[in-house]
Length: 338
Image (cartoon, rainbow, N blue to C red; front, side):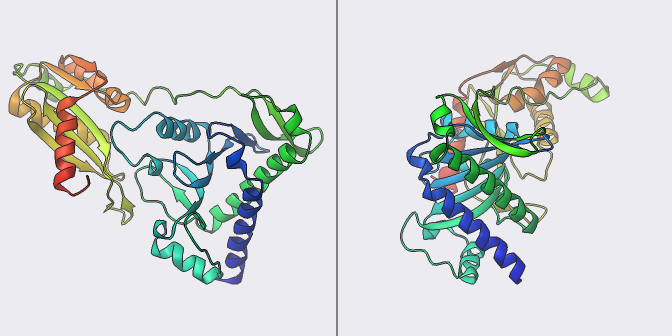
């Protein structure tokens, strides 16, 4: 690390400690909306002071509405699939954690910076999160962005705690840092901002009939009712690109017998759509067309709906998949993850 990089890291730590001085976790709920609308107005940045959902005090920064909404949706909608939901985000985190939260790179960084921490909840560190991958330290360019994001968040907090913004703030309103073209400067305001509670439908994949789909369509219907589900495992593997990743466990099981018919671990660098269709074709080749396909994930629906329509298989979106849940529990137990 050169002196310029070291100075950036120390500046980021100073800004985070200045934010912590306001004790925002004692004042704001996790769903209080903070926005920084950049001068170019391309993508807004959303902040959240996470606490209960992370079991740590965190400053979360999400670039783009979709990343923010998806993170809040995952963190606050329960965890029926027993995933590490905190890791399934796209954003930056400043975390006051414990010593055992730190990997060797983060610990080495603190040592090089000369930062000493004592006790649980005092180990401040910064990570970039990307869905499906293990979090990593921000790179040099990301440090510049984070410093800028924190400085604008500080101005929002100053306006709230030390200025008039707190008096003007109404419950349910967002605290917004926005650029005024006429005044040629940023202002902090409290106003209503319409932010969806859900990211909406996942991408829909369309398929054109061909010889292969016609062969599947004319395959006789078998006796199985097929459940299809996937969820992230709580253990990291090495992806094809050399990065540590949380694999997506795909399971296909017969709901009548509970028998697992197909399974696959999918890392982020692999196109999960191709894996899903390929595994379904293998099931049809071995057992005939299912009487019905059941799934609960919207992204699976987006991939399969048009395909199932073409090959003439009934599909149903379900809230529960008992055969899948039993199979996953057994697999996780065998892997020592329960």
